[in-house]
Length: 73
Image (cartoon, rainbow, N blue to C red):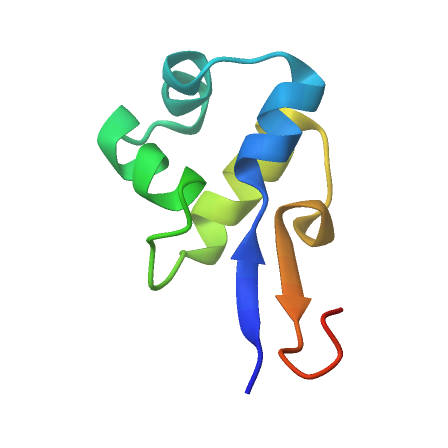
């Protein structure tokens, strides 16, 4: 079975926004955003994903990626 990769850190770097600034825009704690950013989160609310996409001006597919273990894609 594959896994879901969270690319919040990649999009943050592309948009040149800090963790604290994004957390403030999305209205979540920096600690919770850090958990998401490091890939340790087990779930994400659609409302949070939508707020992150709005703040980073991106699509959900820019944030979430499915990686198949067998094919590495």
